[in-house]
Length: 127
Image (cartoon, rainbow, N blue to C red; front, side, top):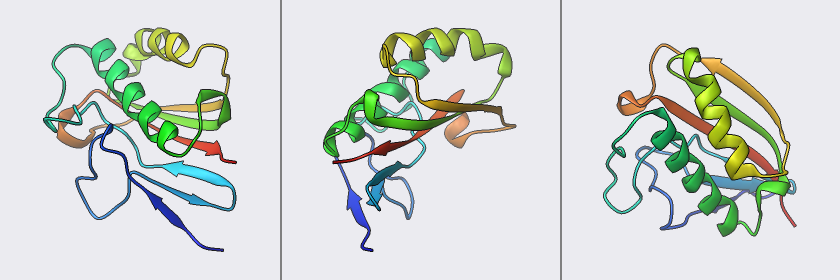
């Protein structure tokens, strides 16, 4: 089984030795996306709502590059710096994903890259 690496300029470039996403065995596995503007590679300004929106835009761009959409996503993991932000992130998540209802885990972590408030990764079916 071969592994295909994916890249789109519409999501932040990898900031380390990893890929934005890989495809293997009929599934897309994304790297965790943080709220970086893909053009400036800077963290977007604003609260957790603005950050969650940017994260989901970034993930959407990666999905699109793979020929997928939110309805193809089977699992997401949401990493929050503060679980108290869950309700506000959940509102953004519901708005962006629409009727898609992938399985999801949400965990609070002590820190995230670049001091951001939210990071999300996804697994989607391709083809």
